[in-house]
Structures are given as structure tokens and as C-alpha cells.
Length: 556
Image (cartoon, rainbow, N blue to C red; front, side):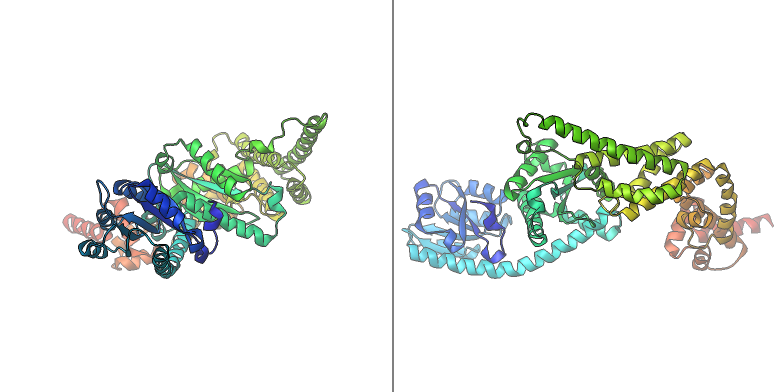
């Protein structure tokens, strides 16, 4: 049976039935007795004894179990008791018996069995039982579904905060409770490919329906790990994506390698969707707090390359001359873009603001031209980014390349897509040109004296690299680099050092309370101030004041 029947509205979803009987002909007879699908059910599995049934119920969700009472190893009553006691499944149970036994019936009811049917099974009796159970399941499912939808939406909000790097401890704690994480993790971006012309030709409404189906299919494939699937992570641009918080646990459950698991999920989704599905992978991180780094790498990969083109899309033998023409066109496109890129890079390097202003937008439009080969576009974006990184390195050999690359990632790929529009593309080119200019200006280091003086005078204000950079016309990344080189610490740590030094002076020279001093030197949170002070001076502010006062008395 195809999954499409599971993917419609819940009221039309077929309820999955597990048949349990040690006699194969009984199971076959039950399956043939009625039109199960017409009644809203589907025979989704069979087991020949209670032990096998427990295993199947632990691996897959069933809504109804129809089981014989008398079976070897584990009876039907024992099966119900085992499942309910260990909370293996919420499935309803119907027990079958060749004779009526009051004690059996009493035990069945005690353990939550929904019904007790005598053999030989009568068609009408079975239909009545199924309809009663179906009604009860639908009523219960309505409340559970509302609760489940709310809980998943809340989880997704917490996961998105982590993925976008804008999370707090509440987000992190809740996400960790709901995910099954083992070992390293990474972010995987899956989307319906925009290179699939059949998909592109559809209406926006139909695309959105298919987008939701992609999410639903993935959630079904993940089964009890469906919390790891997030709908619509990419914030801007035309993208029909889902995100996966991938754990090393996932391939282990299927006895696969990472590559085999990815091939499996793509194959399953492509077959069920009927469209090309593309995957982009971020790098491994050791903890959930760092998933934003993996997400950024996946976003870069989305721009730089494509995962795999299915063999069905590769023509075996092009018509005579067609292959040569295609290669020629691709080479022409490559040359066409590379010349334009080199010219823009030269303009950025020389600080030619007019050239950047006049040509950056036009180049963006050419790069986004749908007539160009998409893989070629990704390769040229990669060429552009790494050429810019190389320019900075040529100017200053001991530059922190990781910081520059992080700056490029944040400015370009933070939304999940590179340069959503030509305005952002041009602005990035202008900003980076200014950054290179500042690298060359040795006099820029002289500004550090002014910044140092300003920190001494205004240490209690909300100072930041960005605000200092704007005031002194320095790129914030470059300012951070020369600041660390000069003082041996980052900007934030330097300001904390100044504030704590000023606080120590106030503790010794005034009788102001600790919370007043904390506020005076720029700390809004007194507890945070006390912790920072203790980590620097080895004692709390109160103990610091008392110790120094006692030392003064002794010296007198």
C-alpha cells in the first residue's frame, strides 16, 4: 500500500492493525473476512506468537492488535499485560477465543483490552467491534493530535533558535529533553530541488502542499526520532526545505554507514515524492549548542555544490555534436562569469567604490540568471569568497583566517542563502573593500590609543566592537583582530578587566554597597558581577573589601 493514504487529513488516515495468532490460516482468514480499508483499517503486520508481537510493537506504531488468547510461550492475556505494564504501545487490543471464559474476560478487561470476540468470528460482529474501536481511537486522537501539534511547534521554535545561533538556556534544555542524541551531530538540509522543471512548473499552492508532504514523509521514515525533523528552516528566498538534526545514533539503528543512511533517506523521499530531493550537509559538532556552525556550513554547501544528480537524469548517449555544444556553452558561461568576477574582485582590492556601485548589482543579476548552469554558479560563488579571503591574507600574513571566514559566513550565509538580493551583494562588496583598506593603513593602529582612552572614560556604557568600529570608521572584524594582537585578549574581556579594576578601587575608597558598585561600573546583574570579580581576584567583592580593610588596620 502506498503512503499517500497515510498523508491526507487525519480523519481519512488508515489505522494500522497487527494480527497475532499461531495459526497462519486464522490470520489469512481474518485478513480476507472484511474489506479492511473500507472500514478505515489496514493490516500492517502479522506475528505468530506473543513474543514476536512485543518485538513488532516496540519497532512500529500500531493502533489495533487482534490476538488469539491461547498461544505457546505467551498467551494473549500475557501479551496485553506485557505491553501495558512496560508501556510499549498505546494500541487497542481485541482478544479472540474458541470459548467464553469469565476469568479470561475479566483479566482482559483488567489490563485494558477493548473487546473479547468468540470464534468462529462472525463478519457482522467483527465489523461492529471495529467501528466501536475506530470511533474511540478517533475521539482520543483528536485531543492527542492537538497536543502533539502544539508540542512539536514549541520544540521547533526552540530548535530554530539553536540552528540560527540565537538561543538561551531554556531553548537548549528543552531541545535536549526532546531529542535522542548520541556522539557527534550535524545539520542536514533537505529540499525539493529547484532544478526539477516539473516542480517549478507547479502553482505556489501546490508547491506548499508538496513541501508539507516532504516533511510528513520524513517524519514517518524517522518514526520515533521524528522530533529531529524541522519544517522550513531557511528564512528567505524560494526554498522548500526541511532540516534534520542528524546524530550518529541514526545509522547505527539501521546498521548503516553515514553515507548509506543518506542514500537511503534520499532514495525513499525521491520515490515517494516523485521529485528530485537534494541534500546539503554541515560539518560534525560535538554538542547541540554548536549546531549553528554546522547549519552555516550546510548553507554554504547549498551555494557551492550539489549533492548528487540521479542516474536517471544522465542521458546515456547525446546526439552527435550535442555534447560538444553543451561543453562549449558551459565553458562560455564559465569564462563569461569569471571575467566579471575578476573585474569586481579587482575593484574591491583597489577600493574603487564607483566601479563596485556600478557593476556589483549587474553581476549579481547575471549570476542569478536561470539560464546559467546552477552548479557553475555555486563554483563561482566559492571562487569569489575564497579570492576575497586570499586578498586579506596577502596583505597581512598573520591574519586570523578563521575570524575572516566567520565574518564572511555571517554576512553572506546567515539567512541560509547567499546574498538574497543585489543590494546585499553590493553592500558586502563595499564593506569588504573598506575592510581591506583598513588592513593596509598602519595608522589605523594609532586609533587604538583613542579607543583605549574612551574605554577608560566610558567603561560603564554599553560599549561594543560594532559601536567602536562605527565611531572610528573601522571594520568590526579588523578592529577585533588588532585589538587582540595589541592586548592579548578579546574586546569583551578587556572591558571586563577595566570594569573590575574600577570596581576594586571603589570597594577600597568608598563605602558604597556591592550592588551599587556593580551598577556604577556597568554590570546590570549583581550576581554576574560577583562571579566575574571572584574569578579575577579569587574572593568575593565583600571579602576583598574586608580583607584589605583588615590589612590596613594591622599596618597602622
